[in-house]
Length: 394
Image (cartoon, rainbow, N blue to C red; front, side, top):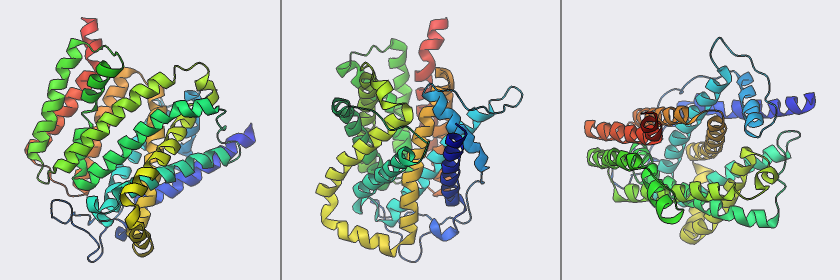
């Protein structure tokens, strides 16, 4: 047991140290050198001139939170951790790394997309290989001694997982394309409207029942997106439409995943939320690889040249895949340990931090009308999440 814990701790320390290096990379990693920075679809050069590092290194010993999260989420005995007076330090660490991962994913992803030529470059190839990087990390966890148990699924179980993988692929590809076609902050605002899509599709295809109070809460959600669109200086229909498409796939994914986990014995055979996420990533990679080969395969040679000649692109591209995998798995583990209201507050805070923080770092527009739409929309999403509890108590 001691060997298992030390092996797992060692692996997570290595991973956290490697990913924390992104924070301390010299300024050239996040800056466009010479004429490398391409133009966006709007015709303007995307500003990525950043100086210095972002954030601070966190003590690698905090990786204890990863092990405790996984043990707790999978129903095992949690690893002991000290708590401060009245404060769950481990849970705070989960939130910190979840927010940090989401924040840095959006930055590294955008810089990689800009370096590759924006929407006219290789967004589908980048989206596919980001999933590949995450998939490799997931397989590393299976292969490394005493880290994570290999799923014991049957071929029928694998086929049942395919719809979730397909929806994951569609959501990720559409999201990456949206962020390549417009501002990250705008894409995140549109993606925050996912509850509207989930409510509509859930009612139409999955017989979900949505209360009248929740339907009313969708008014500010949709209104917020409209205001944000009007206030977005670099607005493109490509960004709006593909971010909306990402919401459609995400809504289907949530419903398919919920349906999948009702299969008798499947949860035990998969072996926990970490394995479930890894399987969906690997399946999504396969679906994305086919679409990327069809739509961008003819210019793959140019992509290889980009990797060889542009270290800024390569470093941000690799780290974006690692951040994407890490923050999504951490989000799943964090949600497993919190109640519905805490989840709603956490998601709302995360969206505000990412939208505003990334906009400042990437020097995107923060027009008052755009900010107004942002806060109206996100406020509506938060209200949508808790309205049934509020109405039910009265």
